[in-house]
Length: 114
Image (cartoon, rainbow, N blue to C red):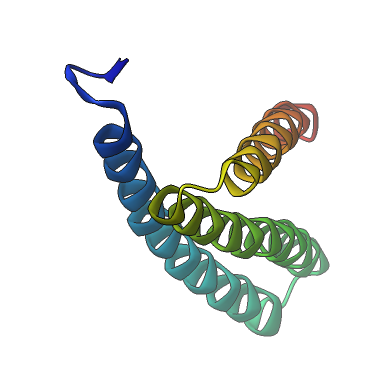
């Protein structure tokens, strides 16, 4: 029982903490994206530019909600790993699967809108 040639629990903790750092970085980037979308919408003189800014704002806002939920579940994962609670880890895995499926759907939907 190992994770990348190290003990399973240690590997899971490393993955959990790296995920936590990644989530925080992505949330910060999403907040910057919201600010950029707001600037585009506010300063856009053309209706098409304002429409693109509004769509960008909506997409980034939805992504930010999912990222905040993912951050919460990452914290649940780390608590579950530290306290040896399987239910917490299962909750994280279920949410991670749902998140990945929704992310894939959004990825392909972005191609359809182009």
